Image (cartoon, rainbow, N blue to C red; front, side):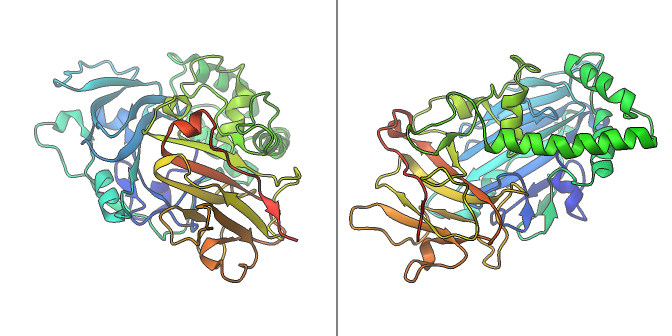
Amino acid sequence: MHVGPQEAIADAKMGDLVIWQNFLDPKGIVLTGNDTTVYGMVYMDLKKNGPMVVEVPPSPFLGSILDLWQVPLAGIGSDGGKFVVVSADYEGEVKLPEGYKLLKSRTSIAVFFARGLVINNDVEAAADTVKNSKVYPLSKIDSPPELKVQFATGVAMNTISPMDPMVYWARVREVLDFLNPELDQDASLMISLLKPLGIEPGKPFNPDERQKKILADAAHFGWIMAQTISYAPRFKDIIYYPGTQWEWVLELDPTLQKDFWRDLEARTNYYFQASMAQPAMKQKAIGRGSQYVRSARDAKGEWLDGSNLYRLNVPAKPPAELFWSITVHDFETRSQVQTDTNNAALSSYDKLKYNDDGSVDLYFGPKAPKGFENNWIKTIPGRGWWVWFRFYSPTEAFFDKSWQLTDFKKVE
């Protein structure tokens, strides 16, 4: 469970739309965030408000509705959609309006996550696709209130799990109040494991000295284990392009309904570095949605190091009808690398210098090579980094791998 952006913006409240209207920049520490799509999200309090309505008009849009386990309740594409979201233990009658789909959340808080896709560099239009969404209590459907919008571009915030062990476990204690162990076997098992450590729903978090030591050790070693599983996975099919260091981003079943506890390694591999997985991320959909691959090593298999300069050649005609992007993420924060350029990504929308064969050389390092300043992302000496390469509206060449990325090569 991550800190919601509402907690990082002074005036924002549960139920507000937080939107990075001019992209998420590196000042916002958000797991694998990028600055090529317009993010927005609304946290819905189903216990306080009862059933909630989510309406998304048809538009260049990718999004989803999820519970706090990050289980997708519904994926939303360019066709939009109308939904009523209700807590699974809601006892009242739900009068479902015609044309709306009922979604049941195992947790009393659910989240609406939106991405506005930029078409022809029109960022404002992409932001409008997110702002045009509606989220409000079903009880107010006859006169829906206007969704309050909070702008977040340029706002310094940290949404990743707290590094202080006691702060982290106190946050876990808070999250337990949003679970429903009577209806949710996963929640019941989680609570049964935490109870002996002084973490229990509805009770103060006040561990004794013995429990504090156990919790501190668990947080420390758990973080190291999760980092290793995430950055150095051992899945047999993790490599996407044979003979390279490029990995398939998503190993797990995004619905999290199969092998929930037996697939912990696949869950850790993804959720340590990212969030909001959707079934569409593992489905072949020509010309729709998006697909991702990642790399953390160079052509020799060595970890990417912020002290070095690397070149990545992107072959001509990348298989993305809409656009492609590459984002540099820091090993520690798992978010966009923070430098004085305030830029951690490049995309086909940028004014890049191309080679005669249509390919493009991208550079990553502390200093830009002369003449390639527009093709460069600055890295931090002494810190590790990795990238996600994103394909928006992927073509057949992505899925059949007739087009392939090359590895990062260290520039001597």
